[in-house]
Each structure stands twice: as C-alpha cells, then as structure tokens.
Image (cartoon, rainbow, N blue to C red; front, side, top):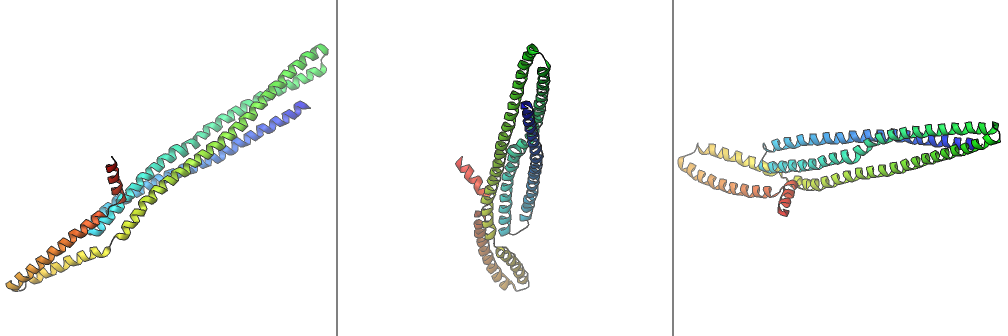
Length: 284
C-alpha cells in the first residue's frame, strides 16, 4: 500500500512538472515572438524617421530664412531621437529578446531531465514491486534478502522523488525571477527612450512654435516691391530716376540690415541636438 501511495504521488509530481514546462514553453515562446516583432518594427520606425530627416533637410533649402532655420532644427532633433531609438533597439535585442530565446533551450533541457527522472523512477518502482512479490513467496532466509533489497529500492525511489521535487521548485523559482528581470529591463529601456525623446521634443516644440511664417512672407513681398520699383524707375526721367534710385538704395540697405539682424536672431534659435553637441564639447 505504501509504495502504491508513493507511486501516485510521484505520478502527480511528474504531471505537474510536465504542465509547468508546457505552459512555460507556450507562453514564453509567444511573448518572445511578440517582443522580437516589436523590436523589428521599432527598427523599421527608426529607418522611416531617418528618411523623414533627410527629406526635411532637402525641403529646408527651398524655403525662406525663417523656415529654413526651423526645418533644419526640426530635422536635427528628429535625427537625435533616432540615435536614442537605435540604442533602444539594441538594448531590447540583448536584454529582452535574447534571454527569452534562451528559455527555449532551458525548457528543452528540463524536458530531457524530466524524462530521465521519470524513467529512473519507473525502473526503481518496478524493482520495488518485483521484490515485494519475492518477499511474499520466499522462505525466511530469502525473505530477509528480499526485504533488504526492497528497502534499498525504496530508498532509491524516495531519493529520485526528492530530486524531482527540487527540480520543480528550482525551475519555477528561477523562471519567475528571470521573467521579473526581463520585464524590468523592458520597462527600463522603454522609460529611458521616452524620457530622452520627451526632453528633445519639448525643445523642438518650443522652436516650432517660435517660427513666424509672416517673416518669410514679408521678405518675399519686399523683394517683389523692389523689383517693381526698379522697372518703374526705367520709365521715368533721369533726374527722378537718380533720386528714386538713391532712395531705393537707402531702403535696401535698411532692409538688408534688418534681414541680417533677423537672421542672427533665427540662427541663435538652435536645435536641441546642436546645443547638446556644444555642451558636450565644452565638457571635454
């Protein structure tokens, strides 16, 4: 009766371990697949953003001074965020996806180990049953030998059962600790990226709000007016042309001076990336 009770207990432990491995293999495998896809799509997002940066630089060369500076600053900040996104991708691959992939081999080895435990237990249990039958049918002297052998077989069964219990507990404990660390690393990587991106984008938002479209429109209008005045001057008398030309030159000098002042002011409105690079150089 005792060995039958132990046999039932052992079978329950084996089944419990099998279920634990099965659930771990299924769930961790699916999580690994999802996070690997998440990482790949993050890398694709980085690539698309790089294309946007290049296009913004090209676009800025066709615009007026105000938007030229604004678009250039925007492109530089977007490029800086993509550097942070690249670091995010690399950290996800090494700290999250790689450990989850490694669990495939860990579970595979545990399955092999479980099969070996189960085979050893079955063999020892059969030996115990066989000796029990011998003990019941043998004379006193043979009965003593059978009882000693049965005790040894029973001890082996108990030892193997204990090893199985330890394997189950150790695997569960290690699995929970590993999952905790993997997702702590995942959240830390995400927090770091978004904190850096928010820092850059906050400055970028300020720069975009400071862009004044009217300034570029005024520059275009002033250029058109100057062109019209020049054409009219050619149709008037020499004296009037000379006077008006002097006035135009004075106006142009004033406009150029104002434009230079405005350009210096716009240039001083740097991208976050440019300011960061300057601070880094100063620190060195």
